[in-house]
Image (tube, rainbow, N blue to C red; front, side):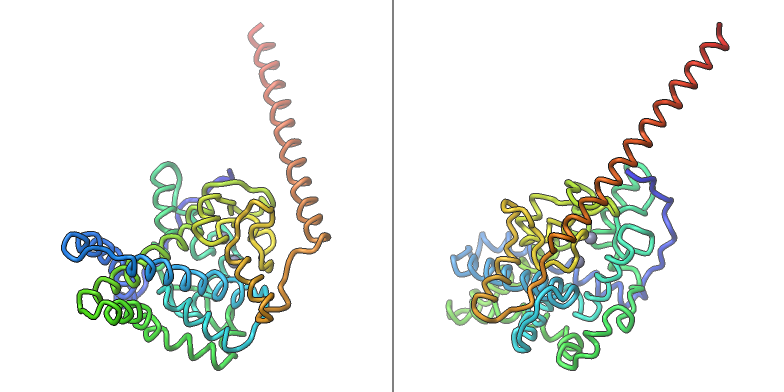
Length: 335
Ligand SMILES: [Zn+2]
Ligand SMILES: [Zn+2]
C-alpha cells in the first residue's frame, strides 16, 4: 500500500447545494424506513416487489450502460432514441445531471487516487479514522464539496449534443418521474391511493436508495477491497460482491486498466450483466462499434504489470540486503 498523504483541506459547497445533496442522500433512506414500517399496515405485494426489481434494473442500467459505458467512455455506439432513453433512465437514478456525472467520472479516471480525484478514499488522513473518513468521502461525502470537474472541459462532447444537453438540464423532471411513475403503476393496478404510496416507496425511494449505495460502493469499496489482477497504477479493485450487485461495474480494476472496454468482467466467470445487455442490443441490431481490449493492449498491460512486479521484488531484495548489512555492522561494534 502506498503512503497516504495527510488530508488536504476540502472546501464545502454553498449551503443551498449542500441542502439539495442532503435531501438526495437522506430522503431515500427515510423512504426505506417508511417502507419497512408500512409493511405492518399496508403489506407488501408482488407488484411492489416487481416494481422495485424492474426500476432497479432499468435505472441501474441507465447508469452502468448509459451514463458510464456509453456517454463517459464511448465504449459502443447506438441510435439517438436509445441514447435518449438511457440518459433519462440514468437521470432517474438521482446521481446528478448527465453533464456533471460524466465530467466527475472522467476527472476520476484522469487523477485516479491522486489528491485531485473527486472521490478517492485515499487522501483523508492516516490510521483507522483516516480510513473511515476516506470511505465516507468516497461513498457520498464528496457530493457535499464543490465539483472541480468543469463540464465544459471534461464533458464538452455531451454539452455539444443538443439532445443530451437538454436531458441533462431537465434532471429534476426525470427525478420526479422516476418516483411518480412506479407510484402511478401501483395506484392504477391496485385502484387505491394506498397502492400508489406503497409503489412510490418501494419502486421509487427504496429503489433509489439501493441504486445509490451500490453505485457509490464502486467508488468506495472498489478502491479499497478486492484484487488487482491488471493494474497497480491506482488503488482500483475487482470486488466479487459488487461485480454482481453493480451489474458488472465491480470489476473495477479491470475497468481502470481498460477504461474504454464495453466489457468489464473479462474472464468468463466475471459476471457482467451490463455487458450482456450491450451484447443483446447488438444482436438486436441496436448497438455497434463495441470496444473490447485488443490482444496487443492486453499484452501491454500484462507486461507493465510484470515490470512493476519485478521492480517491487528487487526493492524488497535490496531492503533485505541493507538490513542484513546493518545487523552485521551492529554486531561488529558490539564485539
Ligand atoms: Zn474508479
Ligand atoms: Zn469509468
